[in-house]
Image (cartoon, rainbow over all chains, first blue to last red; front, side, top):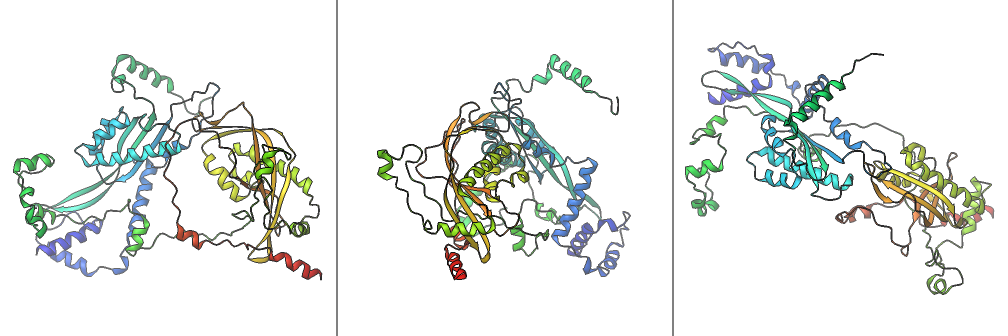
Length: 236
Length: 316
C-alpha cells in the first residue's frame, strides 16, 4: 500500500495541474487508477524538452521584471573608458562577476554576502572558508574566479589589492514538489534557485564602509541627490 | 548512520562513534537531537525533476541525450592561408651594421632559401593575373597598405580592416585589442622598402593559386596602448622608435576580387628584446599543445614548386 502511495505521489507531482484541489479522502486510490490507465506514452518528455520549457518560463519572468536578467551584469565588463590627459583613470577599475541558477535559497545566501561587503579579498576568502553554511563555499569559488578574470583580462596588477564593493544574492526561480503529511494530507515543497552578484574594485578597502551610510551628513547627501536626479519624461 | 558498517570501517568504528553532544556541535543547530525517522521521512517526498545547469553537454551525451541542434548552413569562402610558404630567413646583422663592416661579414651571409632559383617562374605566374606587376612599385604600395592597416586598428572595426588585412592577421591583431585603445602614428621611413622573396603555391587543385611576397620595411613609429580604464599599459605617446620588419603580403590569384593584403610578420631570433610592460604581472602557465591534434592537422598546400614545371611543358 505504501509503495502504491509513493507511485501515485510521483505521478501527481508531474501532472499536478490536471487535478482538482478538492480530493475526496475515501476514494483516493480508485480515482488514481483511472488516471493511470489513460496515460499516453507519446507525451513523454526528454530532459532537453523540460529544460527548454523551464528556460522559456525564466525568459518570460525576466521580461516581466520579477527576475533580474543575467546578461546585463557582465556587460559592464565590456565598457571601454577613454584615456585622460592626467593619466589618472576616470573611474576606479572594477570587475563584475556572477553565478546564476545556484541551487540554494537566496534568503540563506544573503547572510554571507552581507558579511563580505567592504572587505578586502584575502580577508573575505579567509572568513568564508570557515563559515557554517554551504552558500559560503559557493561564494568563495565565485570570488576566486573573479580574481583570475581581473588579473588576466582587466589589467589588475596585484592579486591581493582588491576589495568587494557590491555583493548580493537574489531569487531566480523555484521548482515545485509534493510531500505527504500525517493522514492523507499533502503539502507543497519548493526547491529554490538563486543568483549571486559581485563587484571587485582595485585598491585598499575604505576604512568606514559600513558606517558611512549611517552618519547624518551622508544621509542628507543621498536625499538631496535623489531629489536632483528627478526628471520629467517627455518634457521640452 | 551506524547501520552502514563495512569491513573497512569496523576498524575505525571507535573513532566514528561520537557522543551526542559532539554530534550536535558539528552539525547545524537546525536538526533534531535524536533523528530516528530520517530515513522514513525521506520516502514521503517526491523526487524532484531538477535541472542540471552545472553539467556540460559532454556528460549529457554520454547518458544518451542529444545535444541541441543549432545548425545553419552557411557558405564558406576561403580567401587566405594560415601559414607562410617557404619562410624567408633574414641575415643577422641587418639593421645594425653596414655591408662593409666586420659584423656583417662574420655571420651575415644571406642564407639561401629553397626557391630563390625559381624566382622568375613565380613572377611569371603572378604576372598572368596582374600584368602590371613591378617589384619596385609593389614595395611602395605594400608600405601604404601597412600604414592603412595599422591606422584603422584604433577604430575597432573588423570589416573595414579586412580590406587591408587577411583573416589570419586579423585573428592576431584584433583578438587582444578589443577592450583597449591604441594610438599609432607613422612618422617616416628610414630606408626604401625592398622586396626580398616571392612564392606561389597551389591549394589542392591546379587552378587555386596563392602568392606571398615578403617586404623589408625600416621605419619610425609611435605606439601607445591604453587598457580598459584609460591607463597606459605599453609604449609611450611621444617617443618614437626604429622598427625593422619583414612583412608578408598575400593575394589569392585565382580570385577576380582578390587584392594584396597584409598576412604575417617574420620575427627573426636575433631581434632585440621588446620593451617591458609597465605593470608587473605573474607569468602564466606554459601553453600545452596537443601532439595528437597537431599530427592530424596537415596543410592543404603542397610543399613543392612542382606546379612550375608544367609551365615549360605547356610552352614547349
